[in-house]
Image (cartoon, rainbow, N blue to C red):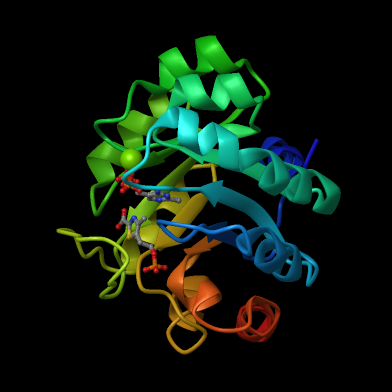
Amino acid sequence: MPPLGADFGERFARERRPACQLYLISPPTIDAAFTEQLIRALGEGGVAAFQLRLKGIDDHAIAALAPPLQRACADAEVAFIINDSIGLAKRLGADGVHLGQDDGDPREAREILGKEAQIGVTCHDSRHLAMEAGEAGADYVAFGAFYPTTTKETQHRPDHAILTWWQTLFGAPCVAIGGITPDNARPLVEAGADFLAVSSAIWSGDPAERVRAFAAVMRG
Ligand SMILES: Cc1ncc(COP(=O)(O)OP(=O)(O)O)c(N)n1
Ligand SMILES: Cc1nc(C(=O)O)sc1CCOP(=O)(O)O
Ligand SMILES: [Mg+2]
């Protein structure tokens, strides 16, 4: 089982939380060269999860693109997470699914994907949504967008304090997302993010070099 799953399960038993790790989000569209980019990024270590988030194509097309990416994740012991679709996550045997507020019910995802699956839920800037997600059995809650991003239109801008609040009260990990770069990541780590979910800041340059740049900031 990839380290994301193992880590999530063990957190409740630990006194000290593990160091913040990267959660890579794919670009919204990819080409055949992307597998090599992903392998380079994952080769650096320090990445817990990769989310296949492709927009504007249907599940069949995503399923056709997924196998080499899923293999790269398995080889690197990185959790392979599917965005939006419980059905596609099931079909591919993915390690988990990320659900937005309109993407489905975490309880249904648990029934379909099983107890080992990693189920993440978008909670925007809302403590209420995060508590609901926790009650529904989410393995992680995601807050964002912390910074301006061109990857997606966003309507919510949480304060960093929401990460500290979550960390203080709840055991499940929290993910920070939205416009995160090596230059602005440190305050999110200090506020208590367990994972930084990042897309454009990884794929807009040499992914291996970008992962190293994040790792340096996350170490402190
Ligand atoms: C880790 C993580 N956090 C938030 C999101 C956003 O999900 P959603 O609100 O469903 O928006 P889309 O990504 O589907 O456009 C995410 N994908 N991953
Ligand atoms: C997919 C996504 N969800 C967000 C949210 O706020 O829920 S922000 C976002 C985009 C993340 O990509 P980048 O690292 O390029 O900003
Ligand atoms: Mg979604």
